Image (tube, rainbow, N blue to C red; front, top):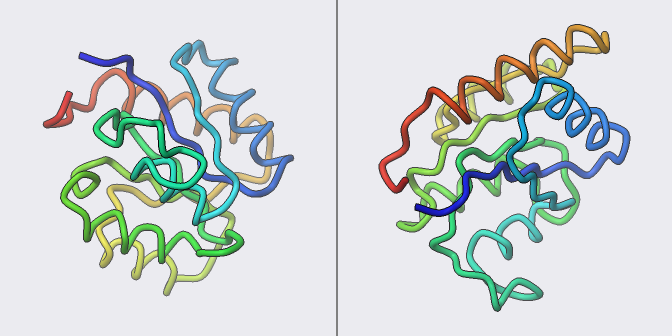
Length: 145
């Protein structure tokens, strides 16, 4: 069994810092890998480009995926993940500031496991991160674990 880790796909440095801080504040001690655009996320997961030496079968416990990303948006990333046998079953939580119902609907249609709107309030964000971390890192079981 490999080490459980989180893949955070986030292009906004402030949101990245806030997410990592919130997870650590809630004692989620797992490694957090960070990629900053949609193409980098796919390269990381499939072991391509600058991640060519990475084993694509070393899959994260959960992917926290923003939707508004450079190069490829989160929905395009999700579509690619679900189309590939290696990543089809990796849990994906869309973690976004989007209030668009169509983003939520399309995320679920493409196979997202959860859709969470980023709370604006810091204390609410900390609580959301606590719940996400506890569920996805401790309670949820994945078939490739």
